[in-house]
Amino acid sequence: MKRAILSVLILGTLLVAVPILTSETCLAAYDFATGTIEIIGSDGILSKALSFFLNAVIFIGIMMVVYAGYRYMTSGGDSTKVQAALQNIIYALVGIAIAILAKILINFVINWVTGQPYF
Image 1 (cartoon, rainbow, N blue to C red):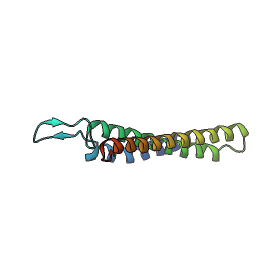
Image 2 (image 1 turned 120 degrees about the horizontal axis):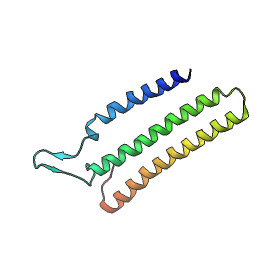
Image 3 (image 1 turned 60 degrees about the vertical axis):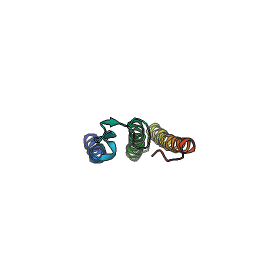
């Protein structure tokens, strides 16, 4: 049963991650006309890498909530398993909240300094 859950989680991750990784927004900001690469800015490599990293953290957090929910449902009333599953849910939700707040804070500061949104 654990192998089936693990394979479903891996397949779900691949189904979400492959289109994201192969989209135009993840490609490097290479200007073919001038032959330059933009490193900072709204289309720069750093902004795309940071956005991808924070989105990956949020996605992993959501997957951890699903896994912890599965552990909670299959605990069978064992208080130690229930407590461990609830702690995992809390940790995953805190991680998701920190990643979302980091995106908001970075966007706010960049918008305040430059006048244009970062993400």
